[in-house]
Length: 95
Image 1 (cartoon, helix red, strand yellow):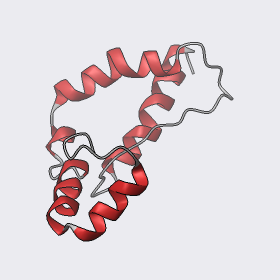
Image 2: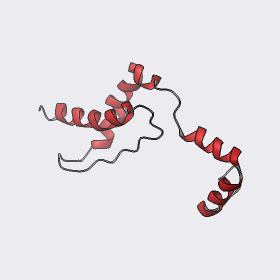
Image 3: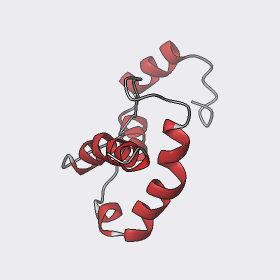
């Protein structure tokens, strides 16, 4: 929207309806085209050591945690988004 200087979401939706190239560009920006992230141990280490602790800081066991997983192709992302914080919380409390 910023690149096209469009101020509102309704206007942008109308623009997408008229411009197939913009729709494809948006699709390419949002969708992750590789799953190599889940074959890179460094990525998991950053999640486990830096991101997940901040996400659950101050939460109790019953508190909800909402995580957005954009552009998932094969469910690995959703699985980790659910299991990673749960495992961290369990290990943190000695369960």
